[in-house]
Length: 172
Image (cartoon, rainbow, N blue to C red; front, side, top):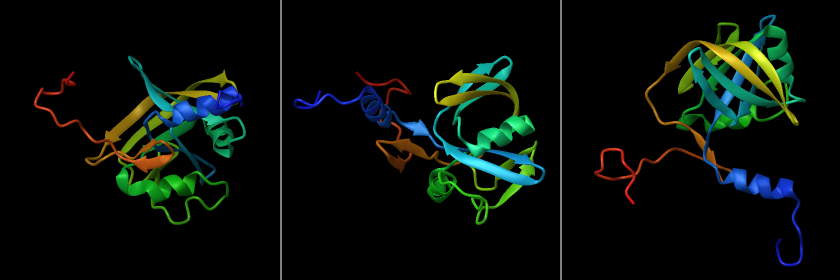
Protein backbone atom coordinates (compact mmCIF):
# COMPACT_ATOMS: atom_id res chain seq x y z
CA UNK A 1 0.00 0.00 0.00
CA UNK A 2 1.38 3.42 -0.96
CA UNK A 3 -0.38 6.12 1.04
CA UNK A 4 -4.04 5.16 0.71
CA UNK A 5 -3.57 3.53 -2.71
CA UNK A 6 -3.35 -0.26 -2.94
CA UNK A 7 -1.03 -1.31 -5.78
CA UNK A 8 -1.95 -4.36 -7.83
CA UNK A 9 0.09 -7.45 -6.97
CA UNK A 10 1.50 -7.59 -10.51
CA UNK A 11 3.02 -4.10 -10.09
CA UNK A 12 4.58 -5.08 -6.75
CA UNK A 13 5.96 -8.31 -8.20
CA UNK A 14 7.35 -6.44 -11.22
CA UNK A 15 9.18 -4.05 -8.85
CA UNK A 16 10.56 -6.90 -6.74
CA UNK A 17 11.79 -8.77 -9.82
CA UNK A 18 13.43 -5.61 -11.16
CA UNK A 19 15.59 -5.74 -8.04
CA UNK A 20 16.90 -9.19 -8.95
CA UNK A 21 20.08 -9.13 -11.03
CA UNK A 22 19.64 -11.42 -14.05
CA UNK A 23 21.84 -12.49 -16.95
CA UNK A 24 20.78 -11.30 -20.39
CA UNK A 25 20.62 -13.65 -23.35
CA UNK A 26 19.11 -13.93 -26.80
CA UNK A 27 17.17 -17.13 -27.48
CA UNK A 28 17.30 -18.13 -31.14
CA UNK A 29 16.27 -20.77 -33.61
CA UNK A 30 16.26 -21.18 -37.39
CA UNK A 31 13.28 -22.36 -39.43
CA UNK A 32 13.77 -23.01 -43.17
CA UNK A 33 16.94 -20.89 -43.17
CA UNK A 34 15.26 -17.91 -41.46
CA UNK A 35 16.61 -16.90 -38.02
CA UNK A 36 14.30 -15.98 -35.14
CA UNK A 37 15.30 -14.55 -31.78
CA UNK A 38 14.27 -12.60 -28.71
CA UNK A 39 15.97 -11.16 -25.62
CA UNK A 40 15.28 -12.95 -22.34
CA UNK A 41 16.40 -12.73 -18.76
CA UNK A 42 14.29 -15.67 -17.56
CA UNK A 43 16.55 -18.65 -18.12
CA UNK A 44 18.34 -21.01 -15.81
CA UNK A 45 20.42 -24.13 -15.54
CA UNK A 46 18.10 -27.02 -14.66
CA UNK A 47 20.13 -30.24 -14.52
CA UNK A 48 23.67 -31.50 -15.04
CA UNK A 49 22.68 -35.18 -15.53
CA UNK A 50 21.38 -34.97 -18.19
CA UNK A 51 22.51 -31.42 -18.96
CA UNK A 52 19.40 -29.24 -19.29
CA UNK A 53 18.44 -25.56 -19.17
CA UNK A 54 15.08 -23.84 -19.13
CA UNK A 55 13.86 -20.58 -20.59
CA UNK A 56 10.49 -18.82 -20.25
CA UNK A 57 8.98 -17.24 -23.36
CA UNK A 58 5.84 -15.16 -23.70
CA UNK A 59 2.98 -17.18 -25.19
CA UNK A 60 2.64 -14.55 -27.96
CA UNK A 61 6.33 -14.75 -28.91
CA UNK A 62 7.10 -15.39 -32.58
CA UNK A 63 10.35 -16.98 -31.42
CA UNK A 64 8.41 -19.46 -29.25
CA UNK A 65 6.36 -20.47 -32.30
CA UNK A 66 9.55 -20.97 -34.31
CA UNK A 67 11.15 -23.04 -31.51
CA UNK A 68 8.06 -25.25 -31.37
CA UNK A 69 8.39 -25.79 -35.12
CA UNK A 70 12.15 -26.41 -35.19
CA UNK A 71 12.51 -28.41 -31.97
CA UNK A 72 15.81 -26.62 -31.27
CA UNK A 73 17.00 -23.41 -29.64
CA UNK A 74 20.17 -21.63 -28.74
CA UNK A 75 20.94 -19.44 -25.75
CA UNK A 76 23.33 -16.66 -26.73
CA UNK A 77 24.50 -15.32 -23.37
CA UNK A 78 25.46 -11.71 -23.91
CA UNK A 79 28.61 -9.98 -22.74
CA UNK A 80 28.94 -6.42 -21.50
CA UNK A 81 29.57 -5.10 -25.03
CA UNK A 82 26.27 -6.50 -26.35
CA UNK A 83 23.77 -4.05 -24.83
CA UNK A 84 22.83 -2.98 -28.35
CA UNK A 85 22.00 -6.56 -29.34
CA UNK A 86 19.95 -6.99 -26.14
CA UNK A 87 17.86 -3.94 -27.05
CA UNK A 88 17.58 -4.90 -30.72
CA UNK A 89 16.28 -8.42 -29.97
CA UNK A 90 13.85 -7.06 -27.35
CA UNK A 91 11.87 -5.31 -30.10
CA UNK A 92 9.18 -6.72 -32.38
CA UNK A 93 9.92 -7.07 -36.07
CA UNK A 94 11.56 -9.18 -38.73
CA UNK A 95 14.88 -7.31 -39.07
CA UNK A 96 16.46 -8.22 -35.72
CA UNK A 97 19.37 -10.00 -37.43
CA UNK A 98 20.03 -7.21 -39.98
CA UNK A 99 23.11 -5.73 -38.27
CA UNK A 100 24.22 -8.77 -36.25
CA UNK A 101 26.85 -11.31 -37.28
CA UNK A 102 25.57 -14.84 -36.80
CA UNK A 103 25.92 -18.36 -38.15
CA UNK A 104 23.71 -21.38 -38.02
CA UNK A 105 24.74 -23.87 -35.36
CA UNK A 106 22.72 -26.92 -34.35
CA UNK A 107 19.54 -25.50 -35.91
CA UNK A 108 19.85 -22.16 -34.13
CA UNK A 109 21.36 -18.76 -34.81
CA UNK A 110 24.64 -18.37 -32.94
CA UNK A 111 25.56 -14.72 -32.46
CA UNK A 112 29.25 -14.13 -33.21
CA UNK A 113 29.90 -11.78 -30.28
CA UNK A 114 28.04 -13.72 -27.57
CA UNK A 115 29.83 -14.28 -24.26
CA UNK A 116 28.47 -17.80 -23.99
CA UNK A 117 26.59 -20.28 -26.16
CA UNK A 118 24.30 -23.15 -25.24
CA UNK A 119 22.76 -25.21 -28.05
CA UNK A 120 19.68 -27.27 -27.12
CA UNK A 121 17.13 -29.77 -28.34
CA UNK A 122 13.65 -29.09 -26.96
CA UNK A 123 12.84 -31.67 -24.28
CA UNK A 124 9.49 -30.30 -23.04
CA UNK A 125 7.10 -27.35 -23.04
CA UNK A 126 5.25 -26.51 -19.83
CA UNK A 127 2.50 -24.04 -18.97
CA UNK A 128 3.86 -21.07 -17.05
CA UNK A 129 0.89 -18.68 -16.88
CA UNK A 130 1.36 -16.05 -19.57
CA UNK A 131 4.64 -17.77 -20.52
CA UNK A 132 5.68 -21.20 -21.74
CA UNK A 133 8.66 -22.83 -20.03
CA UNK A 134 10.88 -24.47 -22.63
CA UNK A 135 13.21 -27.15 -21.27
CA UNK A 136 16.14 -27.93 -23.49
CA UNK A 137 18.64 -30.76 -23.39
CA UNK A 138 22.07 -29.22 -23.90
CA UNK A 139 24.00 -30.61 -26.86
CA UNK A 140 26.74 -27.96 -26.93
CA UNK A 141 28.08 -25.31 -24.54
CA UNK A 142 30.92 -22.82 -24.89
CA UNK A 143 32.08 -19.84 -22.82
CA UNK A 144 34.24 -17.01 -24.16
CA UNK A 145 36.40 -15.01 -21.77
CA UNK A 146 34.73 -11.72 -20.85
CA UNK A 147 32.23 -10.04 -18.57
CA UNK A 148 28.52 -10.96 -18.66
CA UNK A 149 25.75 -8.47 -19.41
CA UNK A 150 23.23 -8.27 -16.57
CA UNK A 151 19.92 -6.50 -16.03
CA UNK A 152 19.14 -4.95 -12.64
CA UNK A 153 16.63 -2.27 -11.65
CA UNK A 154 15.70 -1.86 -15.33
CA UNK A 155 19.28 -1.02 -16.34
CA UNK A 156 22.02 -2.96 -18.08
CA UNK A 157 25.32 -3.52 -16.29
CA UNK A 158 27.69 -6.31 -15.33
CA UNK A 159 28.73 -8.35 -12.34
CA UNK A 160 31.15 -6.72 -9.92
CA UNK A 161 32.91 -9.18 -7.62
CA UNK A 162 33.26 -8.37 -3.95
CA UNK A 163 36.71 -7.24 -2.96
CA UNK A 164 37.71 -9.42 -0.07
CA UNK A 165 40.61 -11.49 1.03
CA UNK A 166 38.43 -14.37 2.20
CA UNK A 167 39.02 -16.50 -0.92
CA UNK A 168 35.47 -16.42 -2.19
CA UNK A 169 33.72 -16.30 1.17
CA UNK A 170 31.35 -13.42 1.69
CA UNK A 171 32.41 -11.27 4.69
CA UNK A 172 29.83 -10.92 7.47
